[in-house]
Image (cartoon, rainbow, N blue to C red):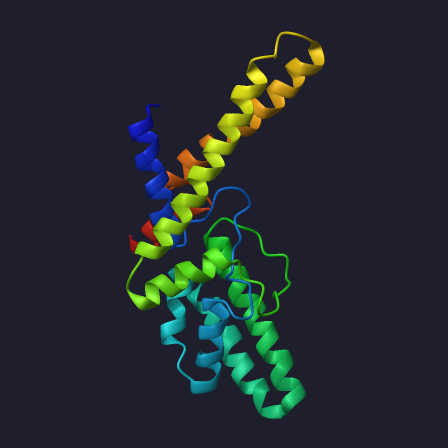
Length: 209
């Protein structure tokens, strides 16, 4: 891969991050966070009695499941504050499980508390709301460029003494693997195949038929 192609892919990573397709390394999903977009909209739906805007987060094949859980939660909410809290949590768990399954990702059954969303993910959401992605792209691509250059420098330096001893050779291999895997992950994200993006697109396409 030449530098110009890699640079284009790096820029694509920034755009992908802004669209919620994931980050290099451990992708941090926020659909199971109490202050994430899914549960935030679910809370609005429970309070207003209108589930329609919420259904975009689930595939058509699972609408009935979510609607049943929603109707049950709305009914149980009338029994008092404690019942309301339990009903809401059960609905959130059902909703997130269905949503994550559509992405090809398992749900551990635990709704994460508010305040734990990764800054980059929060910034991606903010960019969508604000209508400008430039600052996000600059920030993300800058981090990735730094990551590539740092790993390249380490691997390049270790390469010079890789054949002087087995220990030095192993040190080089470690740096080499870190460098290559990082670039590989960047390339995958730039191509839109990270964090279940491809699986989610397939699920949406199947629902459309």
